[in-house]
Length: 171
Image 1 (cartoon, one colour):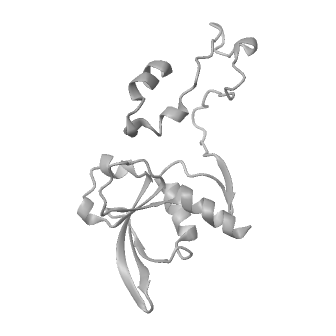
Image 2 (cartoon, rainbow, N blue to C red; image 1 turned 90 degrees about the vertical axis):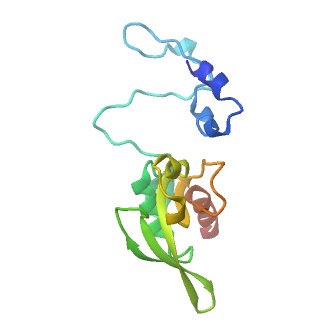
Image 3 (cartoon, one colour; image 1 turned 180 degrees about the vertical axis):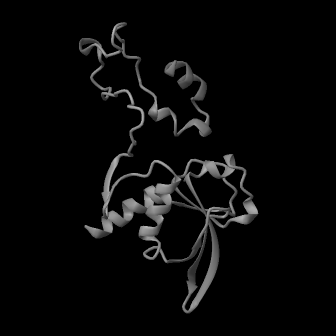
């Protein structure tokens, strides 16, 4: 099935973030216990295990200022933004459950600040998928920017990129 989907999605920008997640080959499984036969496992494929229900999942390790793993949802994005907001030049005025998620101010000139409306999303494309109004927001703060046709007036702050540069500045 992954190879069929790979053919379908090839060259379509909206699936570009999904393609790297697909296995390159289909490992053979035994019929008795669903384990991969060791002698048939391609060397390049990393071991993947079944998900245990009722257990949390974690993103890849990042060890960034006490945050051990990458965000896996919007709440993780909110938390991470809170960790770096001041350093990025934002003063958070309010965070709320409704749209937009956050009101902040940022310095635009010496002694001059401007209000901005921020929506938090795990992936930028979720903004569109959630049906948010493009006029009700100035900035999408996300972990991963995956919306190639994002309206040009919406500013995207991709934390995955920001964290890399902030981590380098600490070295």
